[in-house]
Each structure stands twice: as structure tokens, then as C-alpha cells.
Image (cartoon, rainbow, N blue to C red; front, side, top):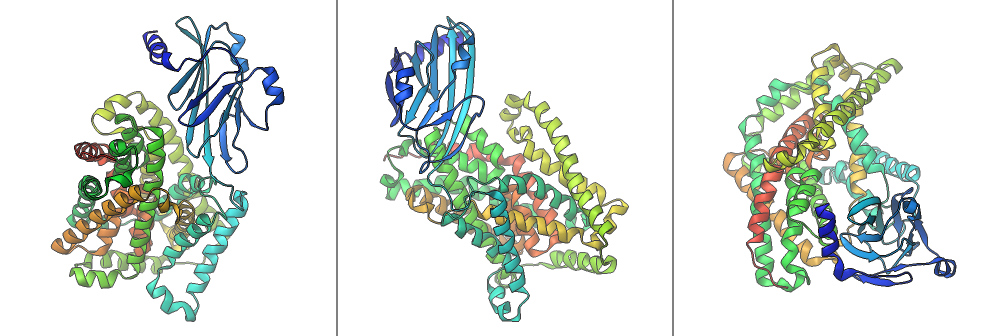
Amino acid sequence: MKHLLLLKILIISFSVFGNSSSQIIKGISVKSLNQTDLSTSDNYTLITNSNGGGTYFLDEENTFLVDCHFLSAKPYQEVFFIINNDTLKYNSLTPFLITNIKKVEYDLQVVLLNGNEKVNSAKMSLHLIDSAPLIKNDAVVLGLLILILGAIFYSESLAGFQRFYKIVPGLLLCYFIPAIFNSLNIISGEYSRLYFVASRYLLPASLVLLCLSIDLKGIAKLGWRALVMFFTGTVGIIIGGPIALLIIASIAPSVLGADASEVWRGLATVAGSWIGGGANQTAMKEIFETPNDIFSKMVVVDVIVANVWMAVLLYGTGISKKIDQKLKADSSAIDELKNKMETLAKKIAKIPTTTDLMIICAIGLGGTGLAHFGADIIAPLLKGSKDFLSSIGLSSLTSGFFWLIVLATAIGVLFSFTKLRQYDGAGASKIGSLFLYVLVATIGTHMDIFAVAESPGLFLIGFIWMSIHAILMLIVAKLIKAPFFFVAVGSQANVGGAASAPVVASAFSPSLAPVGVLLAVMGYAVGTGGAWLCAVLMQAIKVTG
């Protein structure tokens, strides 16, 4: 009960007693309404515990009514309405009208106290998007994305486009064209659930199928250069953030805005994402108590800068031989593995029957189901040790997505030692690659080309940060004569994680996709520790807005 007493002490300055009262929180107006007020109120969107909030477009709905009257079934004395940790106090439970709301994630909570005892509560959330896209129906969006992919692949087969695709890889267009549609608000990656479906269902299925013909000995022969380039990428992220922040703080601190002194807290979450993924990003937010308004901006910086860098890497795959020549790189091990896998594929190739295709789908999607089943058991068990795992830098082990990727990869490798391996000749890796291309298209729907104009200072830090990471990787690659494949996959294993590292690897050859997965898993392991060190270094930099 001590924490409830502390809550009451902390919020006394925010107290508002009586119905029909209003309060402003960070520009948002909150008003408690009685029945008379409610009957004469303007149009609003009703939010209750039953619908739990939702996703809304501000050009369609910008006034919300939170109604939790059902909580009053138990006796209570005080009501606390909490928005993103800002608290209002009332003496009775009436609907709360929220106006002047902005584009940001809102966590809403209503808590009823009877003395020092919490007798009831409800949690809701609002995900707000500025404007509604032209196409909201995910079935239509999926059809559009598949048409885009089909047009790209068809044009690649035409003689008139051969010169164009020697310069611009088709995989880059699979990513960039959906990004244009999203930027023009024809579709909305924020609103669509397609990326979630692709990353949770198609990605693990792809990993199972691509690992079906894995050559572990061949991957082992890739040698130490792969590890060196991966850890170089990690170091580039750790030192790149502080250097970028120091540069901007020295030459143009005003572009960081009024919350300049708190920017490092937000950048810490970007470091977590770029080294270890979403779980580590969340860990950094909690560890350094990043304010929600800063965190929402950093999510945009994270997505845009990382996606632009991914586009650069995909472009680089198309000219990798030229880059290797300049790096004087030894790509013999990679070429040997690719040639070996291509020779094996030709040897066991066959025209697939309907039975073959059905079995391939059973392998991929059945393996995905098994991976989800295992992840749903392991992750909750480890969440009981969340504090301990966080203290040793392994908070990612509590992530269901982490275990999904690990288990899908392990299942694919396990299948490769069985007779199921022969189904690669019937097209298992081709279907796995198809799933990856759909994933790439959905990743593209999350990039807004015009978002840079919203927070130019933060994006400038992001691009300088990524440039330092890239320059360091190229310098080390030159020194150790590492091929561009190791640069691209080592970088993406850090910045993009398991969702996109195999995409970049498969752009060189589908047989190399498992290399991206294995390195990305290492990123999960070092993510929290590396991001924490990066944040501490950024915290030491004095910034005044």
C-alpha cells in the first residue's frame, strides 16, 4: 500500500475536485462530464475498457470520451485519471472528455481507491495517426503490394530493363515503391497489420524453408571476417551516437528543440533498437526513463534512418563486385558457398507437383507454428527473471519475437538433417524467398520519405550517426579485406535485426540468408549492454537548447 500512498502525495498538485471540471495536460484538455454535459456534448469517439482504445485518424476523429462507469460496482472514495503518467484526481467517476489531442501514443488508465486500497482499475491506449490513408482495407493493400512485386519481377525478365536492373536492384524497388505509396498517404504502414503478419508468420516460415538446405560447414568456412564486421558494426553504433550528438550540440544545439537536455534519453532507445531490436529498445526506454513524447519522435527517427540505410545496402548488393574490387576483398569463401548451393539445387531440381508444394507449405508454416508454440512457452517463463536478465544485459531473452526467430532457424537446421532437405529441389527456397519479398514490401510501407522535415535536428543526428557506423565498417573491411557481403549483413544484423538481416543476405544469394539470421541473433545478445554504454556516453555530453 505504500506505493499507493506515494501516488497520492505526488499528484496532490494536480488534484481537481468536482464534476464538470477541466484540466490541461501538455496542451491536452481533459474534462469530466455529468449527464447534462454529456447530452449536449459535441460528437466524440467512445473509448471503454471493452474496446481497449484503438487506432484512429485525427482528421476523422479528434475528440474522445473515456467511459469506465462500470468500475463503480465496488465502493470507492477517489478517482484518478492517468494519461502517460500525468495524473488528475476526481471525487466521482464520470466520463472524461479529451480534446486538443495530438499525434502520439497515449496510455490511459482509470484507478479507483477506497482509502489506501485500489479497488478497481482499467487500462486503455490510443494510437493516433494524423490523417487517414486513401486505402484502409488490408486486403486491398496486400493486393496492391503483390501487384507491385509482380510488376517488378516481370520487368526484370524483359530485355529492355536489363541495363536498369544492373544499376538498381529489383529488391530495392520492392522496398522503395511501397515507401512512396506510404509517403503519399495512399496506404498507411502505421495503420496496416500486414507488417505484423509478414514478420510473425512469413518471416519464420521463410527461415525454416531457407535453412532446409543449409550448409553449416560452408558457413563455418566464411571465417572470422564475418564476426569482425558484425562487432565493428556494433562499435560503430556505440560510438556513433555520442559523436553525432556532440557534433550537433557544438554547432547547432538549437535544432534539438526545447527538450534538448533530454535528447540523449531518446537516443538511447535508438541505440537499443539498432544493436538489439525492439526488446532492447523498450529496455532502454525503461532504464533511462525516456519521456513518451521524446520516445515517439525517436521511433520515427529509428525507422526512417534505418530504412534509408537498408535501401543503401540493397543498392550496394547490385554493385557488390565493384565494391569488392575497391576493398581488394577476398570473396572466395562466399562464392564457393553460393556455387556449391547452386550446384546442389540444380542436381536435385524437379518440377514440383501439388503434393510437393503442399508439403513445402506444411514444412514452412508447420515449422512456424511449432516455433510460435515454443516461444509462447519460453518467453513467459523467462519474464519471471526479467530484472535479473536485464541486469546482465540479456533482456531480449524475455522477447517472444526473439525466441520465434531462434526456434524457426533451429527447426529449419534440424530439418536439413532429414529427408525433408530434398524438397529444396521442388522449390522450398524459392517459396522462402517469395515470403521474404513480401516482408520487404511491408517494411517499405513504414517509411515516410517526408517525415524528415518534422524533426530535422533529430534526423540530422540519426544520419550522422549512421554515417559514422558505415564509415567505420568500410575502413575495417578495407583493412581486413572483407567482402561487401560481410559489410552489408554485419551492419543489417545490428541495425535491422532478424527481420531484415536475412533479406539483405538473400539479396546476394538465398543460400546466404541463414548467415544474416545467425548474426542478428548475436545482436540480440549484445544489444542491451552496447546500448547502455552508448547512452552513458551520450549522457556525458552537455546539451543546451
